[in-house]
Image 1 (cartoon, rainbow, N blue to C red):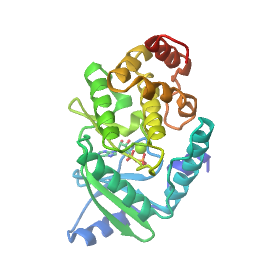
Image 2 (image 1 turned 60 degrees about the vertical axis):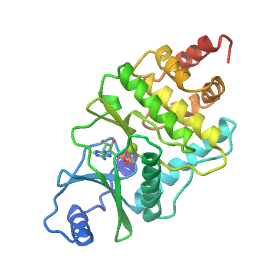
Image 3 (image 1 turned 90 degrees about the vertical axis):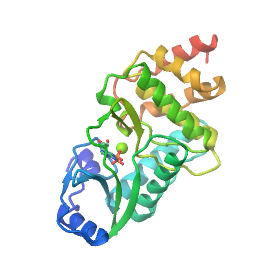
Length: 267
Ligand SMILES: Nc1ncnc2c1ncn2[C@@H]1O[C@H](COP(=O)(O)OP(=O)(O)O)[C@@H](O)[C@H]1O
Ligand SMILES: [Mg+2]
């Protein structure tokens, strides 16, 4: 099997098994689950009865996550920081962690789909969220000024409340009725918050600058963050460039130039 499909697919997931587990857990009958064709890496996404979004987190997903985490922590070291990404021992732990991250995001006033439950099933875990009907990912919409502003307002709100996203990408922001929803946050370990904030900021500037001119994205970043934050984010741009999920068009040099223009000196 090609490496990419090994990472993405997980043939061990039986949809009927998922349906049965949810029926038992919620004490209902005849639930219907169908796969969502998303740009997912670390789970198998399903929609259930057009009402619930369910992420199946399998042992293979947990393994894939730990490989990515290792790579990101090496990236953090390369950028001069201590490693700050957490790894998980089991699907249940990984799912519970994401549930908590989503709860904390919403409590901080960040727009995110409502997390509902974690349902254990045969070594895997089902993470149940409110289903956002009719969504597009940020990568599939024309990002205008309002959307750009809303992304930074939500990101800043997250950071002001002592949280960090950890996996910001165009696929991990959904747009419904011209409003953005943050998904797929990986709660970060404490201790390196400034680095975690700068990493998020570098991911956001990098991802958005494939949709809009870097100067516009960087100007919006400066509207919401201090010069120190943005300059520190520049340290992570090269690491972010190597992430899966960052589009090919990410122009690190163009973003650095835009930051230099804002601060009026070389980085
Ligand atoms: N609450 C939701 N409602 C509808 N679709 C969603 C929801 N959350 C995620 N998705 C879709 O599923 C995809 C994968 O979800 P995500 O949480 O990013 O999983 P992964 O950890 O596998 O990347 C998203 O890119 C999006 O297309
Ligand atoms: Mg995702």
